[in-house]
Length: 348
Image 1 (tube, rainbow, N blue to C red):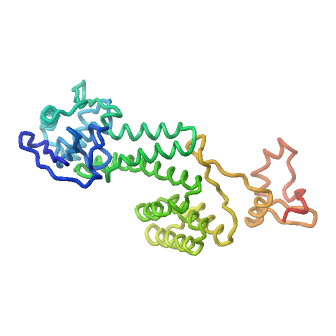
Image 2 (image 1 turned 90 degrees about the vertical axis):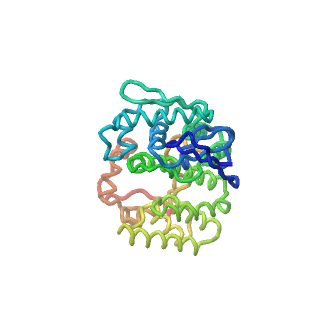
């Protein structure tokens, strides 16, 4: 059962409707930000009707356990046109929320008035946003890919739709919600990396198709989709997806796909191995690269015109000489521009 409360009329009887399951309360969060703003009470989730108290609550919950200034709250609640009596109206909104929490027995939702603003107390057990971030942090510290993947999947399951979809605040949707969405997409991207590294490309393809359609400018989703199609024997579809994103970017933004996507297209066209392998467990936020073989390196340098094969080795372009000079001095002494590199005869 989902109960809809209206903070502007907390004395009225709540209306209710049954939900098929996705909206069922999991018993772990009192406040829900990752979807329509809601309050979980007595085993149900209660979406708040769009109102100024709801906007105030959302603003406080976006900064749990931190003081939010009066000015920031006024700006979020009234956008750029606050009334003269905004400070007093803000206090009235706080009082309505306090009565709402008391009426329905909402635990852990104390709104504290402090010097210059207000603060709401929250923790992972009472706020889904904090639980989501906690699970993501635990995943990063997990000892193996399977454990990391399970924690990230659990974190994503907390999302119930677009964040704060029932909150009418241009300021919040312009300045706060995009950051929340980016946190979610970062976790989704990492989940796909793990699934691919665990050789579950075929199983993750439906999710990759959904992600690329929902976020067409997120190029890494397209990289994951195209390479997964190619690796599962669907080369023609992989090239078709590359043409789709290339056409979209040109028509909508007037740009070409990034270097990684272009390199991936060449890989699929040539039918050779991937230039980049995603590791199952990066040490940091960056994803490490697999080292290329000597033959692959020479092939790419020749394709780029940076080296040219001669009878006795490889002639280095001046640009490559400048880029590698410092490393060459440390190891072997720098060659002169245009000098022949001592290449092995069996490397072609």
